[in-house]
Length: 256
Ligand code: ATP
Image (cartoon, protein in one colour):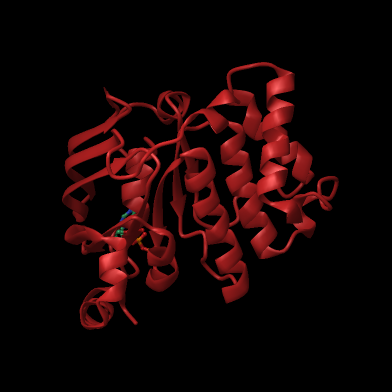
């Protein structure tokens, strides 16, 4: 719980939390990631952009230990985690928020959150306090706390799945396309909450998105993937302000 409050960092000079070097992933004959290198500093948002099939989900799943890499290194909080079991990586403080609305539909909002807290260190008081923080971050969840997750809107489910990951007490989050299929207003609210996590609690976030504009608006750094390779690694604000480059990227790599 303390972790939620204790990190106040000056972005840019903060320590590197996640360091990926030459990461390669094959699914049989398909090379999904090809020598990907990137690093994320504590208290920053890194946007991983790319069209369908660029390798975003594979990158996030490999960081979290859900996919085994063919080669390369992933160092998280100073430890080599490449190829280690997902449970070990979660225990080191990495929260994975999968694509889609992966909540347990038959459980209430509160029960889904409690489930997320099972891997957290600390007792029930700390878990309760963490849940209160989640409700403060996503006020829309407060009034539906006793409702089944099956009755939630798409945006509320996405908030719940992020909240559930937060309940595990992570220090870094990987978020897979949180905006997918949501209305623009809901996307803006959701991404504002991600920004709040970084600004107020110092979370490190790696955010996979096809929605480049929205992601760049809250990101510090941006990495563009194409066919599993990093084709651009740039400061997010600089990239967002460069209309010509954005236009070229959109046409060449982002598929719209
Ligand atoms: P999307 O935005 O559509 O989710 P993505 O950028 O997340 O795409 P990935 O899902 O990582 O991309 O896919 C990268 C490549 O790996 C694609 O060519 C995809 O078809 C392939 N791929 C992904 N998962 C598997 C799998 N389990 N088996 C075989 N190939 C896969």
